[in-house]
Image (cartoon, rainbow, N blue to C red; front, side, top):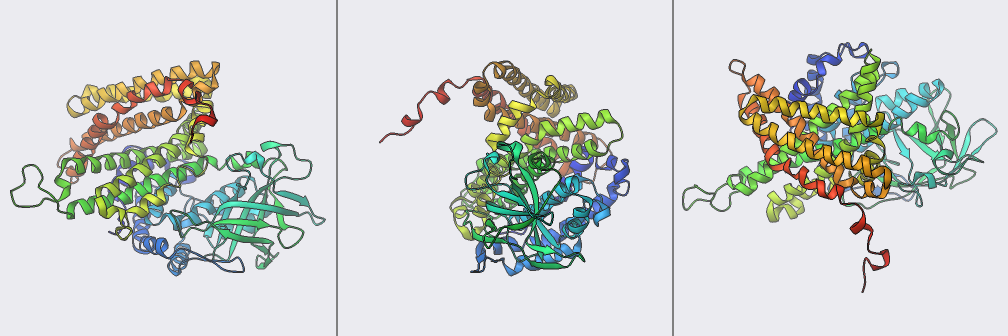
Length: 603
């Protein structure tokens, strides 16, 4: 399997010409993060991920994990060494508050680093990414004492973090959880219960694991309104910051998964040895779900990045294989010679589909991340509000559309490899297996579609989605007016936006009268929304590339010309599917719900 190479040219293009990473340095928190500094940091990140993390990817898939009799989990030695070097290099601290040892860089920079880390090794990346979510929660809602105790070690990566939501009887329905928290005489709490699907809930890569655990206090109201959040460290922390005794948290099993095999997905038992694990309440009782939602946009964006990251690595592998593998004679090739399969039109179609998907995802995810930074830090309240509304609108698209595409692109990589793609030794199947979890993480993609239709279309009375549609129509008109290849892109984009506008209007009209009708069309609508938004962003890429090509002798002429071609491929081969989805969005629930459950299968 070829090594991973960070796509720095494309990353830089998107940062400079689709979003504006340089402009973020004008915001007070990011004054030190000028564009040249950011690009320098990312070049060093790329080198580290290529040389240190990427070689561990195959090792993790083949070696997996060991659960010992005492409940400890042993990770591959290569993981432990790479994580030590990751912490020493300070990569995990880059986006966090300097008051706790962070680098204070924009979240956009972190998302780019997440892409490279996850492309290098998704299983490995889960430890830093779960820690980031825990840091977000504690920074926003922990007491000053809690922040001082835990954040410096978590920001540095010396301690990792987890989020403990899911239980055997409470999957996506978090409100059904049963874990209990009882107050102790010393102001702490005693936590008892079982949590499942806890990524890196137990491992040997860090000295301590800080679990953030959802639980119910006595007399809590039912459902999500009665959920509180607690810090439950693997090792208790003494007043001087040193590690004390082991808390009553036990890993009773790890899941045997189809992918990310070296990421320990744990069943954790709290209070198995006595009166309960020692926990520390975050904020107020019964506010745990509200606190969780403060980090939800970032978490869902990070999962969307997993789709992009694995698609990028799969695409690189597919291109390398297609250029090396010779089979058959391509049209126009000399007789008696086999051709590299990259010369066959259908293989080239698959590669272009992969390339266009990767580039569209990268634009969307970086735009979403830039909007988070502007929503948090721009001095103008109107800009902050508008960007926060865009974050709310785009987050379910970023998570669901990108992870669905991640599965499709990694599957195409297997197809490009032919029979060899189905053989484990080539490594193509690992990317596909690893990618398959991402549409399930952080609320399944069906939940994202319901969120989009049920909550996001109605933001500000529909003004937010209207603003987005108008922005896409403006780019379509601009591209059409340019003529040539850009006109072809603009015409197809305009048709896609028109179809999306029709679908949006139908859902907003019929969804109020019949929620089932809206929910029945939610998934194809999200697909449609992502497809059109991707076309809009690639059209913006093509416009930017055309302007750069008009300059005198650009050094990256081939790269820029490929940008325009890729946008046109997407416009002519992918965007037309948006109109095809309109009928599915507006069909209503009749045929979906018509067959009684007991008749869905019969002997």
